[in-house]
Image (cartoon, rainbow, N blue to C red; front, side, top):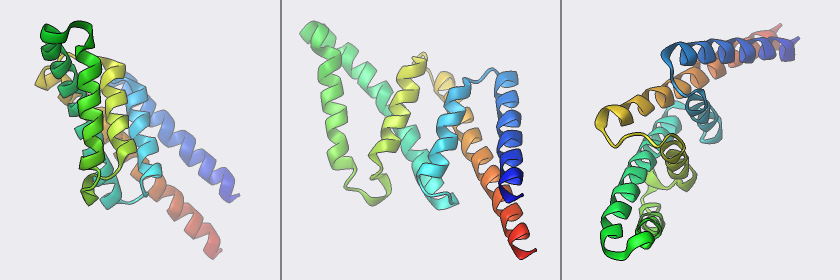
Length: 157
C-alpha cells in the first residue's frame, strides 16, 4: 500500500507541476532539471539552496562564456567560443575548491539550461529561467515531504 500511495503522490505532484509549467509557458524540462537536482544533491533545504545557487551560477557562467566567446572572436575568429569555454570551464577546477561552490555537476546543469534555451542575454530572460528552476526545487521538496509523511504514517500503523 505504501508504494501505491507514493506512486499517487509522485504522479499528482508531477502532473500539477507540469500543468503549472505549461500554463506559465515555462520550459518544463528546466523545472524537471531542478526537481531531479533536489534528489541528487541531498534532499534537504540547505543542500538544495547550495545546489540551486550553483545552478544559477552555471547559468551566468553560460552568459560569460557566450560574451567572452563573442569578444574573443573579434581577435581569433572561430576559436573565440572554444577558448572562452576552455577558460571558464577550466576555472571550475579552482572554484570547486570553495566548499559551498564545489558541486561541478550543479554548475554544468546551469550550463545545460543556458545553452539548451539560448536565452537573450538580458536580465529578464535570465530571470525567466530562474523561476522554473526555483519552482522545480519547491515542488520536489513538497513532493518529498508529502511522501515521507505518508510513509511515516503507514509505518506506524
